[in-house]
Image 1 (cartoon, rainbow, N blue to C red):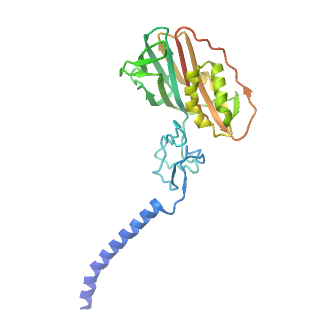
Image 2: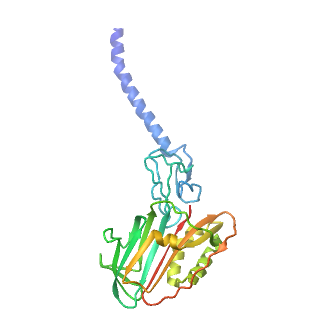
Image 3: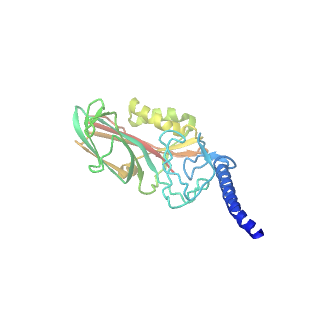
Length: 288
């Protein structure tokens, strides 16, 4: 009789153990999702994890938890990328994260003397990660009907655009020549860009659109080191335009946040004159 009782009780014990396991598993899952983990600011990049942002996430990072193209966590358009998904990306230390510079929001304005069809070819040393209108991977560019006021009609979709927008991740790190430039307080960045971009040759419409994009990314820094790249940028992103423009201005800002002011040789620029068919481009990146 005693043996029979033990046999009868055994299934109940197994069932009870399964039920207990489910309860414990649910409790552990709930604690992971809701309770003891500290929330920390979502990193803007794996190497720049302590930058302030409005978003938070549980401080639990595993080999499967990698950040890829974290957009808009600080302000519009900011990109952060950990490009090695097979590795554990630890945003708290920056270990095992490979970050490549991004050519952020270059936009191309076309100002022909009369309405005409224009082919724009972009040979970029990297990967196009955003475009508007769509970048044609076959022809490596766009074909548009352009008007003297800068309005563009894209032949691929028949829609109207103000400029050609693209954004790309370069294939390798760039050692920017930052031997000249400007050091500007974060609060003064807007006024500095208004004057300097005008001096370089941008119109109010062009430099206002530049400032609206870049100023939110720079205003909260104690200081910004600002350099405008020349051939280093144009060699990375070669433009071929047909018919050939009479004047081309390509403005590409490289900036770096600073905690304190440093001395640097001021950068100088050649005078730009708009004449005939004019092409203007602006964009930028944050130096890492």
